[in-house]
Image 1 (spheres, rainbow over the protein chains, first blue to last red):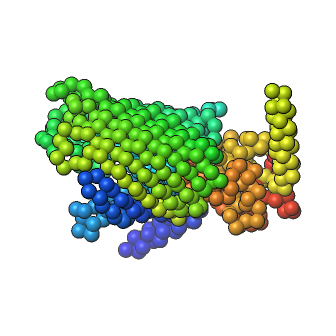
Image 2: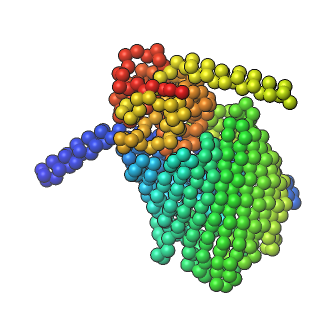
Image 3: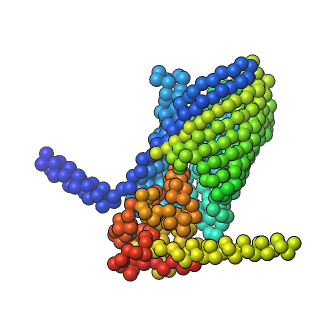
Length: 355
Length: 145
């Protein structure tokens, strides 16, 4: 008993010394948004909504190791309280050599600029919504191991190689040996500009959508029988971003190939383009256009075609709060349209904040 | 056609001297603790403060120390190093930290606090007023254009 007490005190003392010596630097942030929407399709409606609220932690554990966590609470009608929490990111980063890092945990799949830079922080979004491809094609998260390099050489070359749980897995389990693979690279030739491309591959043994897909699980546009066989999932992305002091441009191109033994190869494509012009630092009028087409032979996302045009205005009160106003027209085509509105006009306001 | 060339020349000269004046009149000095730099070009310094490097050549991590918006010279530092406003610098860092690609910098309200932190932490780099006296010469980094 005496020994145990002594042993405990020694461990406690050592722990205190280590913690005291390391002086971890921890930063907490919060992000959230509120919205007002007026829609007109076959009838008009208007409503206020409370958006995702995001609790963000970053901590430097020692000279080489840091932690980052992002925890989101969002509306979910199936929950008893109408809201559900989720862990969106949680990883430990080890800076092993110069600008090269090894990351272990749940990350945003670094497939394109948007998913790498914005994700849940609406404060940083140049427009109100993510590109439509995020709801259908882009695997939002990966839980696994990531090799990352950044700002290498004159062109600020960066790479991200990720091996992790794939689209069908959850945050704690994967029912087969297959892992997803992401290989991405980018360059930043000047301040504010980033050009990148990536390739993502996953083998879905039973074509299930787990927690990492962020897409296809609800399949609100499709009500037929679901395909339960094996499927190969390839995703190629290309991003161009230029956020100069005046002109802002972003193009996200996504090309997705799915292959099944049943219907063969399906080719899906999506493109999102945004252009804004900053006036006197605070005012950014902008336009956007996006297009998404899912092949009729696709058995993961299922056939769909959608377009959206929008014009908007962003007012930045300061770096912690902004207001966006957007008028948009969207159009959706699918053979199973009994419950869907094909054309929609909307006026939307979004107040996004961080602290 | 020639009048356009004259206008371009006048605008260029005006701006060139404007830029030079802005830099020459800068009342700021760089300080760093074992960064490996005795002098540094402004362009290179800007890259350092924009997280071009995670570590110094010694292997020690780069620690960025900046004036907070309450600091009297915050505007001057942000214009010189980041070429934007203090709010723009806060936005730059908030976005970068949120991406998980950089550790947050340290913000202090006064030159004394910046100097005190840099002098006690190897790998730290900051920028303070030239009016501050009694700086350890080993901490000074000559900023050249």
